[in-house]
Structures are given as C-alpha cells and as structure tokens.
Amino acid sequence: MKRRIFLRNALLTAGALGLNRYTFANQQSPQSNNPADIKPVPQFGDPASNHMTAYIYDSKESAVWVRWKNALLTCYRAEAMQKYPYFYPLRALKSGLSLTTESAQPWPHHRGVFFGADRVNGRNYWQNNPDKDRIVSKKLELSECTEKSVVILNECHWTPFEGEPIIADKRRYILTILNDETYTLDCFYELTALTEVVFEKTGHGVFGVRLDPDLSVDGGGVLLNSEGQQTEKDTFDKPARWMAAYGQRSGRTDGLIEGLAIMSPRYKRAPFERNVWFTRNYGYFSPNPFNALENDEKFVMPKNDTLRLAYRIVAFTGTPINAFLDTQWNEFNAIAVVS
Image 1 (tube, rainbow, N blue to C red):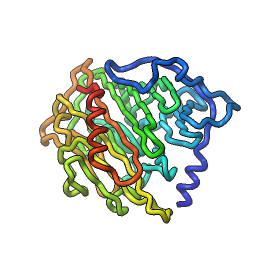
Image 2 (image 1 turned 60 degrees about the horizontal axis):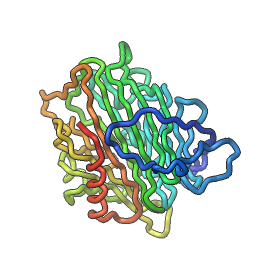
Image 3 (image 1 turned 180 degrees about the vertical axis):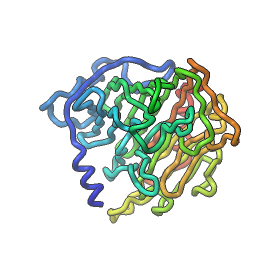
Image 4 (image 1 turned 30 degrees about the vertical axis):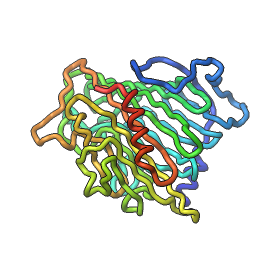
C-alpha cells in the first residue's frame, strides 16, 4: 500500500502540446462537430480543470499524461529507450487506485497495458532486454481533446538489435469518460510490414493487460469471459468476444469492487478470427491468436502488407452485468476497422 500511495502522489505533471495528424478510415472519434467543444491547450499556470486535460511534458517524445477532474487518469509512456510504449497506471474512477500494475512477480516484464510480440522474425519484441529488439516510438502527438475525451496518436518502428526496422505501426488511442464510474480506452493499431514478417507460435502477444493483484483470481478476484467461463482453467485458449476481471479493492472497508474488460472485435483474417485468449490467474490476459497456432503454423505478412487490429478496454465500478459488456462489445465491433 505504501508503494501505491507513493506512486499516486508522485505522478504529477504540467505543460502541453496539441496536434492533429493522421486518422484511420471509418474509425469514429468522440470529438464534437462544434469547434467550441474543442478545448484549448492548457498552459502553465492555468487553473485546475474539472474536466479532461492532457499533456506531453519534458519533450515531444516522452509521455502523455491524462487527467480527469485534475486527478491522474493514465499515462502513455513512450520514451525512446523503453522496450515498448505502454499505459500505466490505468486509474479507477471511484477509488483512484490503478486497475493495472507493472514489474510485478512472477513476470516483471509486464507493463500495464502493452502491445508487442515474441518470436517475430526470430526476435523478441515482448519482454526483457530493452537494449536489444525494441518497439521504438518515433512520433507522439495529441489530437482532439474535449471535456470528456482525448485522442493520442503514436507512430512506432519494430527495430531489431541489428538491422533496419521490420514493421512500422500507427496507433490511435481514444479515452472517453462515460460517467463518474466508467470510461473506455479504444486502441487501434495499423501495422505495415517493411520486409517479410513472420510471427511464430507464442504465448507472448499481442495486446496484453497486467492487472492489479486485487483484480486477479489469485488475489480473490474474478476472471470472466463472454461465454460465462471463469478462471484460467476454463478460459485459457478459448474463444470469447470479451474478457473481464474484477475484485474488491484492498485497503478499503466499504467492499468496493472495480475492474476492467477487453473487447476483441470480429476479425476475418486467420488466425485472428479464432478470437482465443491467453489467461493467467495471477492477473494477466490477452486476446492472443498466436498461442493457438499449430507448432508448424506461422502468420506471415508479405512486404507492404498491412494488418489492422483494434481493442476496447472498459474500466468499470461494481460487479459487471453481462448485458452491459455485450453492449460495449456490439458498439465497438461496429466501429472497429480490422483486417
């Protein structure tokens, strides 16, 4: 608890940058058509806001800090010397505690909400050794920022330890406050192969979330998928539209329950259309099609091929109702442009 309080108190920032560059076709943004709804970029010395504010501080390539009602909501960390960019923390609206963790045992390479893969052209873009193969942030920008939403744009190169980048990816993240207890983080990825790219069978990929221990099965929480299956035993390598994790927050006497869910839309391209999940009771889950590959099966992207992926995170308060999560999946599936 002392470490959690320290992190929560230490994550403060100011400064700003507001830019609008690329978009993905047919993907909806929460921005209003009314120019008056687009907030001006916050400046040093501006009063505290009761709404959404976002900053890129220190340098244009460092990190995006997002605040809701002047309290930290999340940080997208994209420093160039990291293994990969990632979100941490991902704060719950009711308690203010993070729904995710990083550098936790038994696998401290997990970083909040992250994206990458092991065994790509024989390299590792998932864990350890940030001085080796890395997903390097090349351009980080803020786009639309309204009273209840912010759009983050990021361009990255999958760069081996020696040699030229093999993948260029564009990312679009949309954070949207739904109410005082719920928000969504929509994550869109567009990967372009700069050479032939071969993904092999692995449990390490593609879009992953490392939960705060409160939400994990080992910590007394619940792991539940859209088919009503629970725990690692019954959800591992099983198809599902969404996966949710929730639990009672430690250090509180009111029994508050919080959690998050990942929505994985309907894909047409193999092996993504299988929509199977990699799950662990200690607090990790991922819609990972590569673990379901047969031992001699590979996913190959020819040079200049483009792969589009999309996921929605729903951060919620209380025990989730399946109908609510089904509705979230339906809404996201309707707007997600995927391969």
